[in-house]
Image (cartoon, rainbow, N blue to C red; front, side):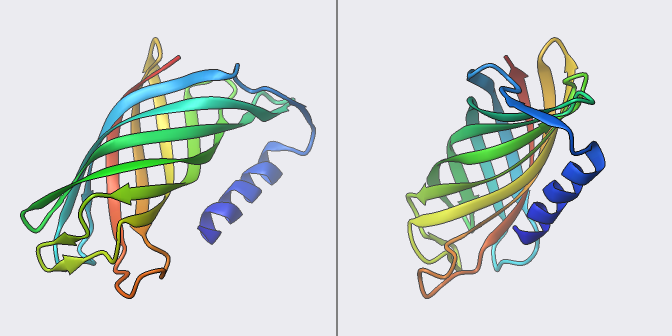
Length: 179
């Protein structure tokens, strides 16, 4: 997460220091969509995740004079996590930051979602407990009338609150509609 914070800080420096405080997007629904993902090879088991999601724009934002906007939102997800022949439910809700290009076609997003999983053992992999944190960084490209293709890298772990904490890295791909 430290690397993500450094990236956002560098974006501020590149974009410029002149801004006005306001709302980058109107408060309300930001986007809805579906994502699928797969894990890397760090775990004993391979994982797949399937989820539906929605974002709700919050009123706190920075609008830069060159057209870039930094906004805040809440993300909500519900889906399933599969691994080692087992399947569990996953739900999460958490805050995020979005950096939006001047033409509103490219969005960068980072955030952290406290997450609950219904199953903690997937084949030979024990993820520790039902409470996890999902940290992510992603990119969305709006290609046609609010439709976007999305990619994000996410890491889910319990931050060491349980004895077992292998963490799961996933590459997530999605399709969404932006309001």
